[in-house]
Amino acid sequence: MIKRLSGTPGELKYRLVPYETFGKYEDVMRRVPDISKAQRLLGFMPEVSLEDGLTRTIEWQTMVTRSRSQEVRLPAELEFAALAAPGAAAR
Image (cartoon, rainbow, N blue to C red; front, side, top):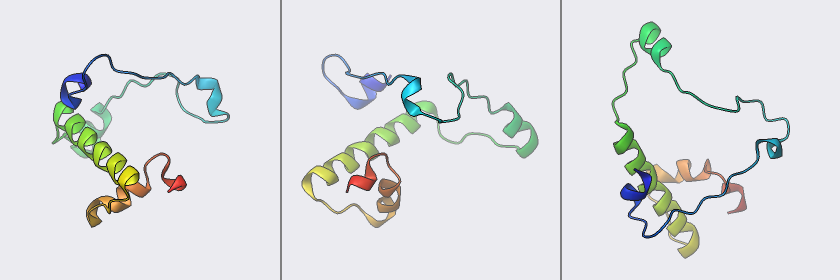
């Protein structure tokens, strides 16, 4: 789905990072998201489909990457989110 949504030609390239390299990072080694408790206790229901969420994420990441490489200023509503992105400290 990501390949189709991103319009990436050819094979997707990715690099697996060994879990051990995170040091004392305390998290589960395998995530299996389950929102049933949030649904039951809070009445939470997702309003964004997986495909729409991935599309938005890909568009945002593309904009952030371009802005960093071309010294282009992000729209104000996206600037804060870009600061929280991985690697933002290197800006």
